[in-house]
Length: 199
View (cartoon, rainbow, N blue to C red):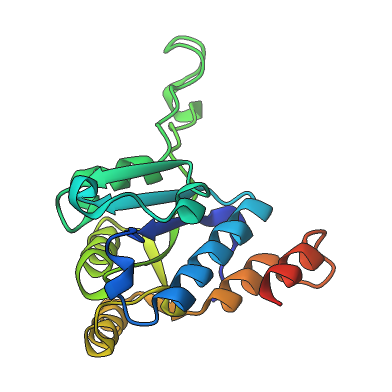
C-alpha cells in the first residue's frame, strides 16, 4: 500500500521554538519537517500545524508555521481532543435539489472529505504526536508517521512511541518515502522540484 497525494493531508505537530533546543536531533528533524511541508505545497496536499501551550512554549518555527494553512493552539496533548479532526474532515455538503426533485433512492448522499490519510510528524513523539495519532486512528483516519521528522527529548522515548504507533496500526515511513510515494513516477511534472528539495 502506497501513499496517494490526492487522498493525503499533512499534520506538523509542535515544532516550537522553546521546545526544539531540548529535542534529540532537532536540526535534522526540523529540516525534514520543512521538506515535508514543501513536498505538500508542490503536490497540493493540505498542511496543518499544532502548537502545545504556545503562551509558554512559543509558536512553531517560522519556516514550519509558514507552510501550514492553519495552526491549532492546544492545551490537551492530543490535538484531536481540541478539534483537529474537524479541520481534517471537509464540511458535509448540503444535498442538491429538494426532496421533491428526485426520489430518495436517486439522491446522492452528502459527502465529506475524501482525504482520509493523515501523514503526521512532530514533537514530542511519545506525548503530543503519539496521543494525536492514536486518537486519529480511533477516529478512523489512516495514519502514517514520518519517523525522521519526529523526535523527543530522548531517543528512548522517541523509539518507544514508534513501537506503540506501529502496534496500533500506524504506518511508519521516512520523509523521502513520502515524497516519492506522492509522486509515483519520475515523469510527474513536479519530480525535478521535489528532487531539488532532497539534495
